[in-house]
Image 1 (cartoon, rainbow, N blue to C red):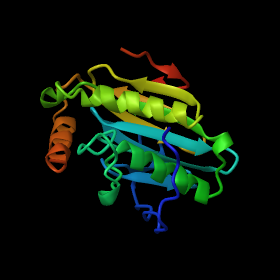
Image 2: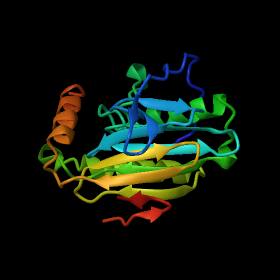
Image 3: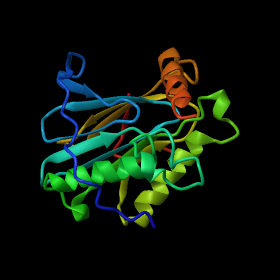
Image 4: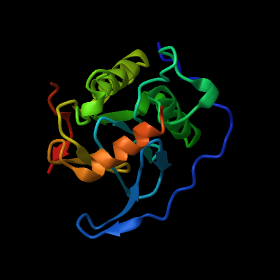
Length: 208
């Protein structure tokens, strides 16, 4: 069981200024690989995923929600998390950081709504380790073991995705990008990898 530990006290990441997206008529904030963001503001959280996975979580009553973006399920040394060098690049820590920050801002575990995305098989160099599949299986197992319901998902397949999440309403819009040909996604994941030495869409997720 992936027990939620009490992460050592540290200030949450400052909310970036973001940018205005005229297409969605919304203030937008990007969540990059290895990052997470929790907010109580009326904004849109945006990320682009290949083999990475993002969890989008919110408490509708508390009016807070957030998103993470991780690349590997756990530390690679012995199959367990590398807690000595904790980083939101790893699924276990990324999930803890996101959940703990939500709870600190008044969210209740019992009210959390969760939607998960990504885990595509987009990197040829990751074929053997199946990192996209491992990430997707990890987040589903994690949520199941923590007793948290998956309210929506778009996982696995071979396509990169761009995810737009509105934490105050819970609305998610997912754009499936050209399969394995999106230069920005591949470049981002390969760069991130260098720093580290088929399931249907379900729930209230809108493809566009």
